[in-house]
Length: 346
Length: 281
Image 1 (tube, one colour):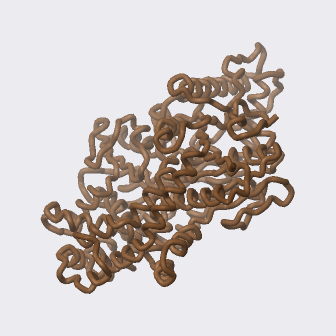
Image 2: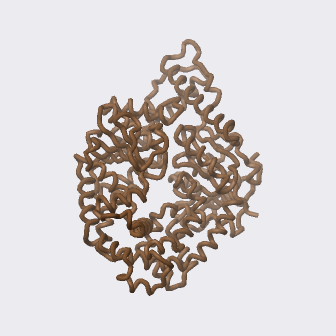
Image 3: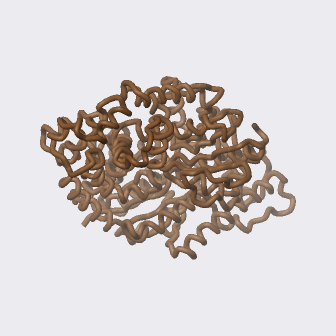
């Protein structure tokens, strides 16, 4: 049985580092582990061995049990057309300017691609653990709502809005003159843009049954996954994390942990400089002590008010650049719920 | 920066874009300008930092002289059709508005032009001296800045095209519009900001952006320290400072804002940033 861990959180909090760290730790504990990442920093990509790699998981060149894959949203959308539409329709879709625009600009596009791919890897049953570094869009919520949003996009609602009535067949497009909505729109747009969109939506709609079915499969995988929420202790990400933490049980499951990244040593909170300390250094300690105190408060608030399991990853001045560095970072972390991932990281 | 009519603030997620937007809006307000702060994306970052509570499409005065609003696409679409394109009685044409909503979901540039168009429309109003837009992150900002051009390619004639031309000029005019890119001296924000800068230089859609590097540590003098937290804190500070200096060297910013220690709420962060901006602007 493949376990899945979804690593979620706002942008810039270190999700990818933690996803990679968990991945290495699991691999070294003997689990066949795949890390799926979205947009890694170069040194992290190098460490994982995913530079210039696409959708397909690649075994790590030197680490047994570790695979990595990098998300390619465009390829995933092409797969939607090819998997769920008739060949001629699929070919038309892939070439369509609106299809390309949707794959790039549809708000949940990258999230859908990530969720779809993650589910594919889980269903392959080739790994013991699949760790997914989720895209930050929508504060992470998009990742869980993407299958439904996708089904909504390809469903008939937008098409009905354009035609103003029951779902039409292709024939309706030859009868535009009779549609007041389209006549007005044409006069505003000075073109047949809306018609072209309707034509595209008609093609897209043929994928509806497949997309809806696939959406249910993806949701089943997400629903049975373990979730962790990553945040820093800064005020804005913490707010985001709280909102997200509270929304998660309705979307998937209660998060296994909230992982605070860049945590300062808690003993700094009460530390004072001994007499004779140079003024600059004493002042420096005061500043970092204030920061430590604030960090501790936001962790305590999270656990006492929302009952969250809190884990802490220390602030390292030098971000890890290789697998050993990532593994060390995880070793110096506290309270990461390894057991829930099916192994002990001793 | 606050002598411009429209200030668009973007940056990679997590760099402090909303905090800085709020800080700029507060500074402009303190200098007696009539300010509109606009949440352009989907988040609630701006309202959190302005401590204003949830924002609506209709601008609301959150402090004397400072109004705030957030983009609501369906409202903006109706306003765009009726006010900017002069389609009369649009409210009675619910089906037309809905058809355009379908269009905005599907066709490239429509959603973006409604959003950026709203900001520009407010600039053209005499209600405000300055509009500060907390814009989408750098990953998406290109499609917003390019929206008037995209529309030009999609729609050959008509009122939309004329509006798009006006928007293009406003964005390109350095006396009216200023793009601010917020960044951090770390790998990913530096890389993404550099890529955005290259793209902007090539596309010529907006004049040279202002780069603001956020959370900059000051240099700590070398001194002997006893063991324990004093030395550990000094050592972490110096290591982080050196790491920051490397990235600042890779992408030299126009302005630097300091790391703010020990602040508890987004409101405090925005107030402090506005004080810092007061000193350097």
